Amino acid sequence: MPESTATQPITANDGQKKTLAVKEVIGDIFAAPPNSVLIHACNCYGNWGAGIAGAFRQHYPNAHKKHEDFCKCGSNGMAQVGTAQLIPPLDEPKKHYVGNLFTSGGYGRRKDTPDMILSNTGPAMVDLLRQIADVKKNGGEVAELRICKINSGLFGVPWEKSLEVLQNIELEPDMPTEVTVYERA
Image (cartoon, rainbow, N blue to C red; front, side, top):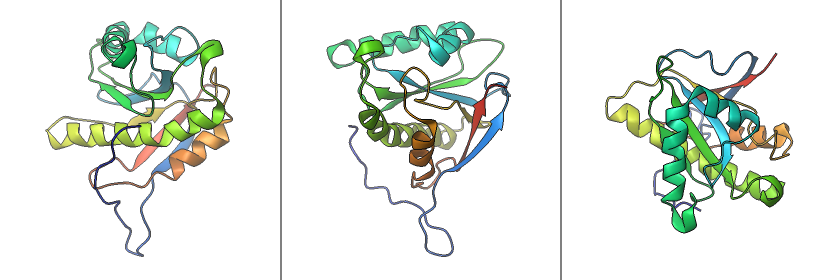
């Protein structure tokens, strides 16, 4: 798990902690405006071999190479589960950031259990939101956040459970406040 920082969640006027707003739509996650962050869940080995990860590999070959290199440089040749990687726009003409949520250590028969994947989803998303906040603080432009129905494909976790995790993320100052979930028609 990533180390926790002492940053306090933000609160609404009524004193309630503010949580991530999640909107669901039907559409193409890849048809995003420039500088959008496209988010998916992945394993820690850098393998974008199938499912939505395979589609990310096709759309963002340069981001895929950076992702593979990132994972290989991690401990034991893999990224740390429960963290995230934000890749800046590398593939023209799309100019999209790619957000990788490391929710399962392995893939295929070696994927983590659904409970483990869910326990890694919140910390990974918080890590990604912090990275996006840092980009914006440093003058970077971020248009919108788009996410697929993470964990529900090859990881086999019911979407409703991942949705609940996302909706309960407590926001910190400067974090994006909304993410739009895209489901194919």
